[in-house]
Length: 381
Figure 1 (cartoon, rainbow, N blue to C red):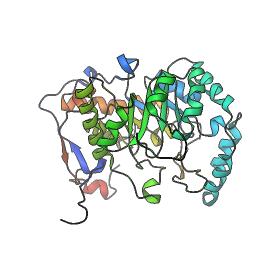
Figure 2: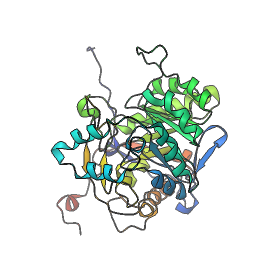
Figure 3: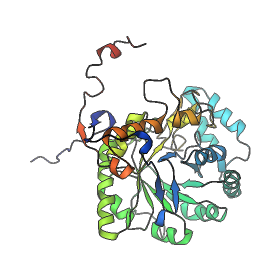
Figure 4: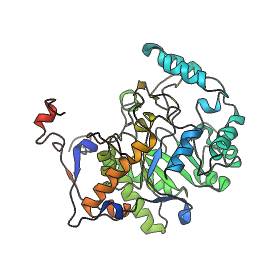
């Protein structure tokens, strides 16, 4: 035996879903999922837009509600630092590539204006629907109560890595169970990738778990810090913890695969691995409704001493409705994500997401190249 034994871990491109022994019509599938006890908040589709300044503003959050999903607003970013945002977005978008991070560090150094927390939530609620807001653990105790008072329905406590056991120099660190009792709204916590941490977080009486460390297209935690677990393995681990917690406690707490999802195939594999919903950033950043006009950047891109993200230009390619529901003329799986999930569920015989969780998966690293020589040679038209 050596000093350490390395276990294999699998990402989206390493696996494939096996068709079921029964097929059903896609229009017979139920994609709904819930957050909170007694299905407090129920959504028609299991799609959540990431809490990133380039993706979700009050208007985008309202649009997600309209289409049956959920958009999460970032309550640590530019929306609660600047009253007028148009010029701020322009400064980030127009920054030269080699100076973008430096310029963003300066932009994000402006102190938070607590009054803007309430304003953004009120703006999002004008058009009705469920409003979710995200805080890093360092600001959650101080600012989440303000958000709930303003009408926020769901609070997300999100960092690169979050655990139930954290040592700090403060007299009392963030105690999630205490925060949940104080706020009295559903709390989603992340991110994590392991069985043990997921179970311990669930013991804190929270209502959802974000799964994923470093897979996002604008996240560089894996390069800067060397940490992360591929998303299929991470999702399977956390799903096992969710199911065991339910058996032991009788309380079902959903998990949400967050990051690295590009196509309908990635979404389908996430559910086959055990997730209850998916959180997506880059595909939403390409929507006409996104506030950053086709640009995208990570939540830690602007960190003042150790940036762990990057600004990228994706371009504006489609509407939110086209991304979620089509129609699509693309063959790469980047549009009509809801339709892709329904069709896949039909092929595996899954009538709902819990049945989709039971779909058989296989290790298949050649799945995207087998028989595709003409595609890889650029002969597709």
